[in-house]
Amino acid sequence: MSENPHYYVAVEGAIGVGKTTLARMLKEPLDAELLLEVFEENPFLSAFYADPERYAFQTQIFFLLSRYRQQHRVIGQTLLHHTLVSDYMFDKDWLFAHLNLRGNELTMYERVHAILGEQIPTPDLVVFLRADTDVLMQRISFRDRAYERAMSRDYLDRLRIAYEQFFAEYTAAPVLAIDTNDLNIVQDPQARAQIIGQVREALERGIFQQPLPEMAGPVKAEGAPAMLKRRRLSDFQRWHQMLDREKGLLTDLYYTYIGLMEEVGELGAELKAIWKEQETLYETVGNRQEARDRALQEHLPHLKEELADCLACLLKLANTTGVDLESAYVGRMNLNRQRSG
Image (cartoon, rainbow, N blue to C red; front, top):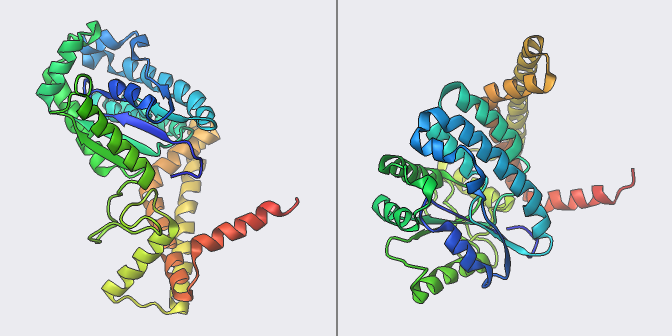
């Protein structure tokens, strides 16, 4: 969680699960500002529910640009002075796009989303509301929005499953998952207090992250026995040390340094390949930034692997020499900031 004392909380879940209702209820207890999605402004929404295949791309691009415009303008400025609660997060757009788009339309969408998404802050906590499909259908029917009347149960069920899969693998921010099937936060004060209490506790104590690979329990952060607000570099150092011990891997200082040089060489070779493809694409597309983006996208899986290998060697070197890498980095960067010129 950031050093800023103001939190950014995003409430997420499938259509009809109660995102906006909960966001409004969290406003007063968290002394927060609200950011609510203005989905009624999408002129393609009613047509999409009636004919999804025909209107999916127009609907999704409108949502993407609308969500970007709203969040890019509001989130950063609000967090300077207030906690912020939103009834959606920017990443949800990606989820809907992968549910509704195919082929070239999805490829084009992904390129635009990647550029815009880099400029949107990540929540300090995501509250993921769950409910069965039949419960969602009942709630949608009860609120009776005109543009949702043509929504099929099959589409809602696929959306619910997509949300479950998305948050099963989501690691960008802590996630508090809440089953709302038997919770009526509108009419039941006890249910309302229960959820508000869970959100407050998650913000005050941090929230459990998914365990690192091959580890049975959560990494422990100093001052937070079994909870973690954000993984820190020191957590990865400790995990890597445990991995070396478990696997019986060699921890010789010079051997590890040679390994690092090898990994840097492989990273250099991958970057060289990206550069070559960028220059080839530039001849075709005529735009260097687009050529670079397309070349990077093509090589991204291998680039991730090489960068991860380099980081693993650095962590291993830091462990072997007894250096707290995070502390060393912060100290060095503070010195750099103080330098003139």
